Length: 183
Image (tube, rainbow, N blue to C red; front, side, top):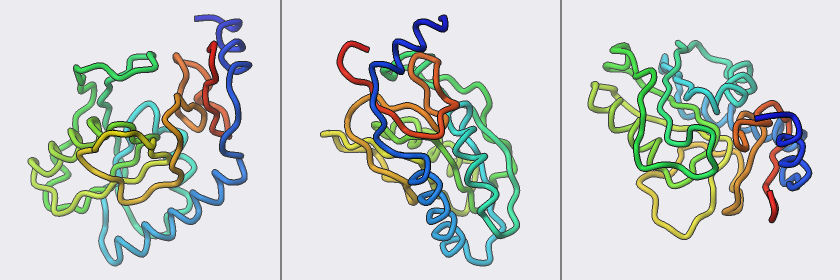
């Protein structure tokens, strides 16, 4: 990995969501989450590392008491295609029992990762599982779940920015970009 490779990736991409649209969508999503959780005291879990930026943007807009923690389940390992094997690096804590749990992630592609998270959290005794993603990829394949809250539907292309990476680069962008041919 090096600077030239990162710049090559950026130059072979196009912006599909502006920083202003990201900010507006996150604010709207926060209101919907607040309306949905009502008087609950949810446990909010951020999926590392992709959801770090999205989480940091969303949490200040959630105007209700909550508890926060993180989990880490990965399929990608700096590639542009998810592998078959999932690796728990940090599993949910036992504090999910009898709780409303809201899981934040950057993108829902095929839904396999979020479904595995849901299944584990519900098996640990959570009262309710909710998911919020910045993006859901539109693919021609059925998914094991749909997010409860979603900022944007994006095309079936590799997208990055706002916490999502392209080969390990560009998580720090305030916009969402999609790779073009030749990247």
